[in-house]
Image (cartoon, rainbow, N blue to C red; front, side, top):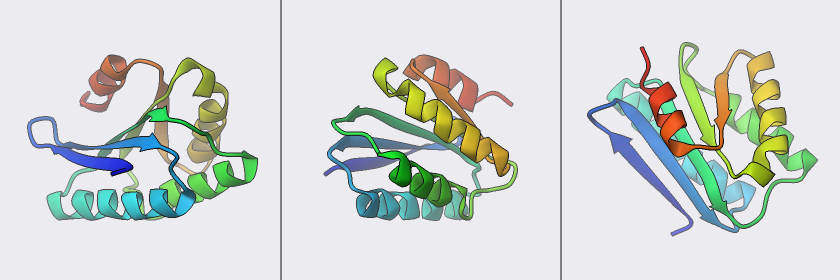
Length: 121
């Protein structure tokens, strides 16, 4: 499978782990599962790990990802995005785009730091 969705019952967040060559259509499907899990559990926190992706989005796809992540995201929610160092430039652009529309996304190059941030109250 190209993605995995894992709810963390103890910490009350959902992890989305993306691998391989993930298309925007596959990301849309994965995001739908994440949103379904959040709404069923009443949670508002997501950790997205894209460190295992083999390709990255181009600029147009980056805007599509921003729209996807923004759509139906809980207003008081938090999203941590874990990337490799070489993915950080585009990831920071995505962070800026999403924060401009009110989504609290923060980019990390360390999964441990992202997880610590996502569980903060």
